[in-house]
Image 1: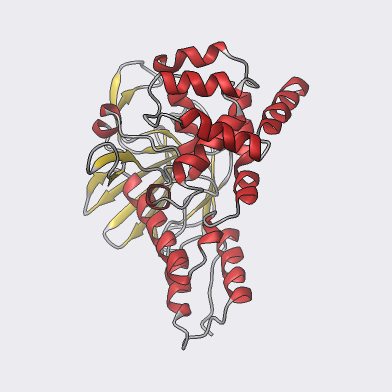
Image 2: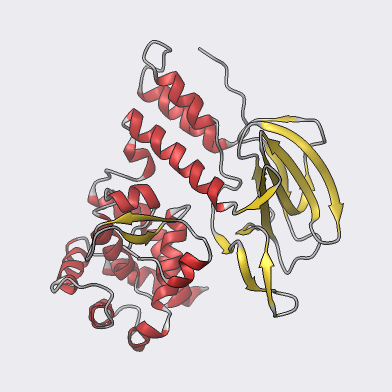
Length: 341
């Protein structure tokens, strides 16, 4: 058996999972897939984009400015190398703060605004190695991780690499047949249990009933098994807006009301859930906000009326899930937790 060197706990957990659940011998061919899985790593334990690559409102001046990278939510967390490579630069400047620049072949990745750095120039890094800790150094409004990527010297959207990492991991899981490891092919109770915490957090944050979020997730994604959910982590059937496309965010083509429509792709399920919540906070769905977070029926009626779904019995389909699996209990739990906080 080949030796594996890594520091990311997610890598450790996944490898142990495979070793315990199948014969991972070279003859079985599984060793190739383990190597492939371990060849990539997300830069953070959890991925949520707070500011995209491209034109945006500058947080300091308030004017429009080009954002040369990607901002990820990170509050003093370990930052991982995404691929095998070498440390090019470790330094500080007034704009980037403490930063680490890694070279991965023709790609150069910079992690900025770090609070700590754990590597030095010339160090060899492996995907999943901790290279620093996110922070608030340099020109920054708060703790986060800023990533810039250059390919052959030219700036590119870092989302390209995050999507590639997601695709590699999905390919490995599907090739080995362990789709349940990604949250796919779960039984219905497990599906809701897996996503209930996130749904309740959205209720506390936005007032959207957790039961509505969960029922829509299950219905729209076919319990996480739809091609859109597997390929793009899109659990709500959300199509691309003009703004989404103009900002260069990822999408995939799927047949719906028309052939080859563009649907949003996300780096993680968490990002899909957050985008869904923000969509429901838009003016189009303002009628929903008239109802309490425990009034799932009127929330669903208002969503349907605003054009969220075209299926005639959409409200009944979601309500059936809510009642059958008692998802309304999550609404009450979230309301109770919010009252105590």
